[in-house]
Image (cartoon, rainbow, N blue to C red; front, side, top):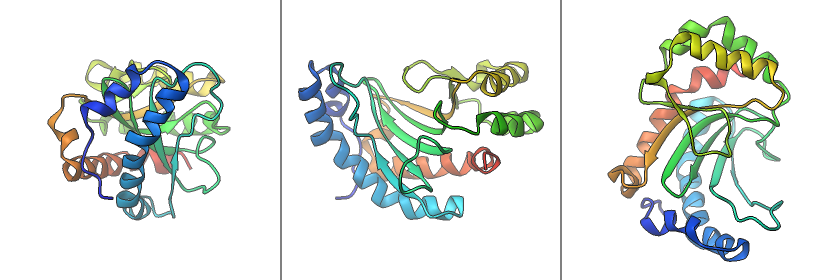
Length: 207
């Protein structure tokens, strides 16, 4: 299966009531698309990062009552899991698709990584396109726009990442559900490749 894009039905998945019924829709509608994206991008991700990369698709296995508000896939160098490592994500909420370079709360080396970022904060901030987003909580839809941030705001986020145990930092792009690029599979994949390539300095500095 080649990736042909996301549809209205994919976003409508998150309006379905009930854990089991929503999970069934995620498994039937979205996860096959994640598998197709993974097949098309995993070799490119290996070339971009210089590491063998593995595809992980969220299973939401810990959920027992509340249905997931979003779902995602990840590219990571560790075959066993991605949450404890810097990684790349592609995911879907009810109103947008996100693509991230992700440092989430399970990552044990956040203090070291944040310090590495702070040592070159001006240079890294200058590399971020103004249409990119930053999230400080991967469970929430809200994100900050780079164009609205000052360099001082950026440094404050990095200090928080360094000093707050549960802090997170995700950098990348949002595509609203009605963005035409989401309906063009190859155009979307090309944009993902370009975005992840642009985030490579952040990924490399996290190791």
